[in-house]
Image 1 (spheres, rainbow, N blue to C red):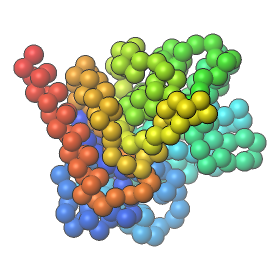
Image 2: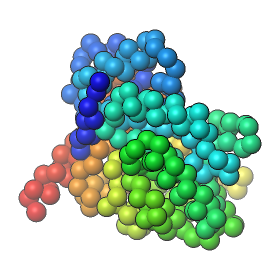
Image 3: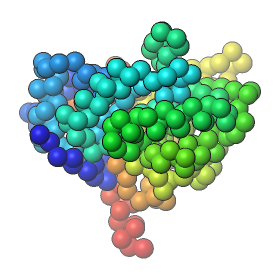
Image 4: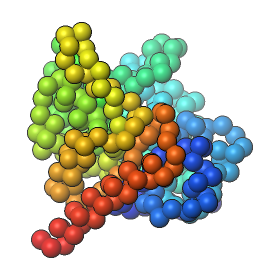
Amino acid sequence: MFIEKPIPNRAGAGLKPEHYGAIFESMPDIGFFEVHAENYMGDGGLPHKALTAVRENWPLSVHGVGLSIGAERPLDKDHLARLKAVVDSYQPGQVSEHLAWSTHDSIFLNDLLPLPYTKKVLDRVVDHIDEVQTVLGRTILMENPSTYVAFEESEMEEVEFIREMQKRSGCGLLLDVNNVFVSATNQKYDARGYLDSFPTEFVGEIHLGGHATDEDDSGDTLLIDAHDREVSDPVWLLYTYLVSQTGPLPTLIEWDNDLPEWDVLKADVDAADSILNEARRKNHAA
């Protein structure tokens, strides 16, 4: 039986089966590993054997992608029970989910879709977070989305919605810096200004990932939250600015598609650790 191990203020990596061999051969000095909960909701087998070995050697964070917390329908009780089983088995240092929806009626959509920021949606999201936290018996972190357009019916800005969500539910926050850059570029607002207004005092983890560049119908740049490449230079700059304000925080490198060799992913982890160490040094000097 595991005892909950806190996530350190270091950089970590998403755990992928393709990297099991390299990880267990090199036993890297890494802050933590993070898994998608849905990949470990089955019984037994290699995934659980590997995750048990990881949990014995490194702190673990669990990131959910399937609760559809923003959906109009009630939460899937079976899915929530499976999430609880994963959390109870591995006692991760943190559990997180997305401010998004991915279900409609009985249909599951293989995407994390944004929400209109209205009071009605806020009430629903807060109720769903309360239910999840009650079932799990712990606080969860909620992640800001990547967006491509804004809803006309929105009654508040995204940061205002997130502030109210946190205040009313007591949840923590997961700040995805790549999502901020993607959304700010697509909707033409200032990414640094977004960070300045974000309630960073409630942030328990940061995510960094790669994005793809495309064009919309007007020929303007359109960024896609692809998680299929290295972190881009503008996102590194935003991240450096953020942790200069907040101090070091647990930081995950997300790489979910077109996976590279482990050493390539580890290089981004090391880069994040270097930025965290510099922020730590400056805080001590101050």
